[in-house]
Length: 80
Image 1 (cartoon, helix red, strand yellow):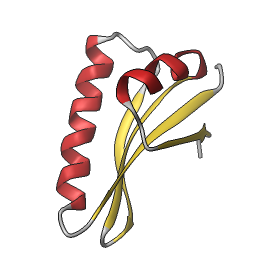
Image 2: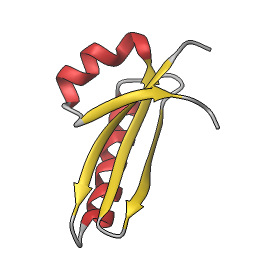
Image 3: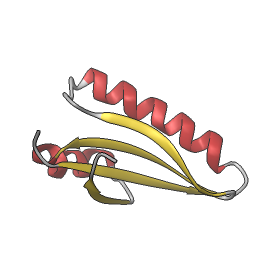
Image 4: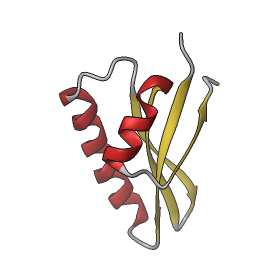
């Protein structure tokens, strides 16, 4: 499989978890609408007041999706 990138949106504060969950839902809908193959979406808890929503995509789509979706940051995705 090709290299994949994890696009990340940070949410902080007492409502970070439900906001990140809601954002991840929309990322999943976007991925389905755009027919992004091998994509993953989800939410991770970094602390009580910091959650992230993410979208994992193949590296070839990174630049166009970064312009469209405006993630806060990104990193190389590795299956663990």
